[in-house]
Amino acid sequence: MARIPYPEFAPDFRMPTPLYGSPQDATLLNVFRMLGHSPGLLTAVANIGLSQLTEGELSDFDRELTILAGARCFGSDYVWAQHEQLAAQFGISTDQLKALHAYDLDAPCFDRPQRDLLALVAEVAADARADDALLKRVRDHRGDRQLVEIIGLVGVYFLVSRVTTTLDIEIDRRELDSALDAVGHSSTAGREPSTR
Image (cartoon, rainbow, N blue to C red; front, side, top):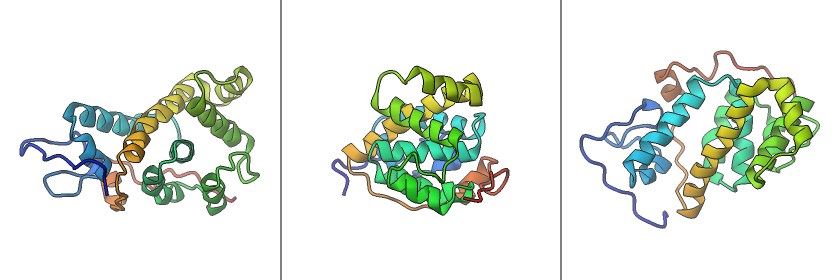
């Protein structure tokens, strides 16, 4: 049970995207319900999430890898539960999910660029500054835009994770496929195949 009550929404409040549900039809994800205590913050986080999903250069696979690693770094079972199935749909293998869940970011089921990405997520999550050599490897492989997107994802999911862990947000398992379709981003289109 959440540590503080969920707020009531004004009847005219509208989410900027259907991705996270709506308070009017009781489909709004619990973390966004809680963010409703600060409607401006809720709107900003929803807009950033939509942008990261639909306007980022990171592949769906790498975005979900980053989010799940962040969920483990920040101890958020809520974020993990919201993204575990989605990550599998975007090509993250069962072995990779198991390794991430065990926080084995150097497991052999990840290739070198993936291990570098995961190491960067862990460093950004834990420290003010990432190692120079690691940053260079990620930058050389992914470029400046993807580097910034990775750091941005870690930051946003720190905020989301801390809301969920500090306030004991209950896990809701709303099916995300229809929401992804609503914003023109199918979980089966353009997915990176995984043979691991």
